[in-house]
Image (cartoon, rainbow over all chains, first blue to last red; front, side):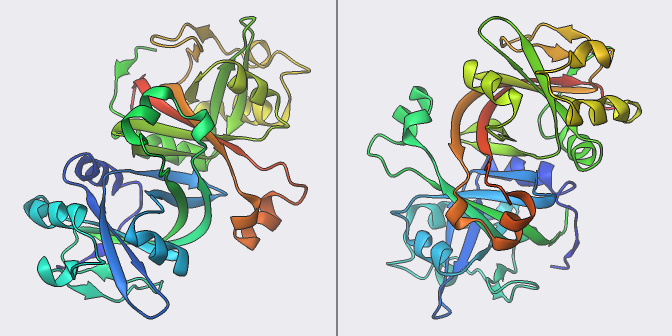
Length: 171
Length: 171
């Protein structure tokens, strides 16, 4: 798939449409070069510190967490509508137990600007360099959110990545 | 100005274009009904907890901070290009010293869904109900960000608002 440079603005409608539906894939890389991916349905995009920023959310219990902590960059890979099955698989299985890329016929390609690879089959890729992380504050969460999403604790860590490259095909 | 319901997706390009330029106005309301506004240049938008979310950033030293803490809702008011002067004024003066709305000929109108008013002259309004706040973690900030934006501390508090109404005119 031929991928052209996109602004984070023009990619937003398609990205959030898919996030709200089947999700997208968040890739991280470990010191030993291993790559993991997980399906995400949440992210925000905009401007902070005068830079284009994407924020993603990862629970410490997830296998992806150790990849996010190991290397300060990540990719968000928005897959086309036809790949809902891969997203469902990557959202329900752990990379601890299975090679998600092999199982789902997903092809890793080197990042253009960062260490974390992207996914060739993605329609939109965001390469992000982590500038910050903080944690949700359990004491200030709206009760309806806390009850629905955190019955056992395991509050998300928020990773703020500068979008250093965004490319794809909006179709 | 006649304002129509917008999705947060379709409002994103115009909102971030203006945030990156002259900014937008963040309104909050206090228990006594007083309203304050400040110019913001940073915000993110997307989906968290299955809901449309806007995140804004306020330093505890700002007068607006006590309004954000007092009432768990806020409005983001995107002004048209012609109102750069009002944005510059509201970004350099404090509501402790001056009535920004009167000085800038800005008209407050009641929120449709929340207690915080919006600004009649805005081209896009987001009404947000605060679901969460957390604070930047000084220890995990990229050094370049920390040196540029936090030489004296005063790290931002992040307010996560569910977008309960979005309306305006995209021109």
